[in-house]
Length: 345
Image 1 (spheres, rainbow, N blue to C red):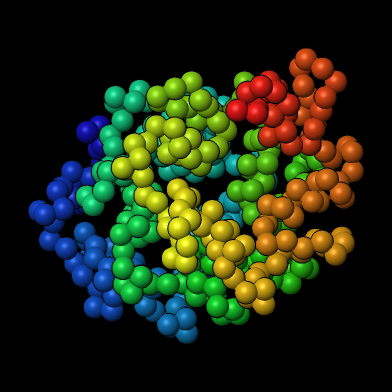
Image 2 (cartoon, helix red, strand yellow):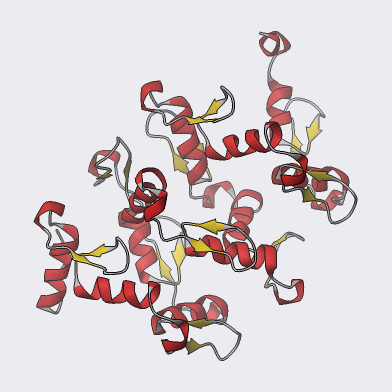
């Protein structure tokens, strides 16, 4: 491949990581868990992150906030992301679209791993050895293997110190801790520059700006390879492909263990079980901060706030192109445009 390196050892590591079959690798195993690595440095990093006691770690402390990290490079990324003015950042700009990023690695990922500008036939797909799943990114494939094919007993769960919540992913635990157990005054809100929207999560702000404020010509569209469908969200494209272009026998159904209900989406199964099979005292209610409204579904709280408490200037109206009809919900606009005869079929 086009890769080149200044050091021979780096080239050897690249060949081992990228071009060596799994059966030809001499794996290095962790003595504490099922982890295995291709190099000694992989194992060393794993032990340091996963199995080193906090009191034995030399932490790298941010001078501007309480953040600390086990690795110096993580602290550098934090400072770049949180405390560096945009005009002082050396941005890495894509030559083919408006995308830009603070990190060279992310630009490479945008161009090569995500294959945003690559023809489908030229994409190097990473295939799951246990099912038909394939991905452009190794991290996505690893997450798939953990989520779908790994025995829960062998997963190193990240557990919340304040409640029974646990997750397979460290970043999810971090988000949960901030959202559910952080003091409101300690929360760093990410605020939209164009409207009153604010959120605790940076990726939610990015998604909001993309959906609400980014001109169509500057939008990075995710396009279906089998039809004309396109979307601003990668997740929506996956849902579309699963719903429209996947053979029924290849679909992984999520089956309710208490009734005959089944669905293609795990979150739908959770919602079903919460609504149909959970005792009222065990339900996690989502409450409105401005009135007594409560619901079992997080999305319903958002809908309620938009309909009952949002000021007119903060509402994005969906306007019909053919008449004066407008609505707060995109789904309602779609329904409005469907002929009555078709709707009744």
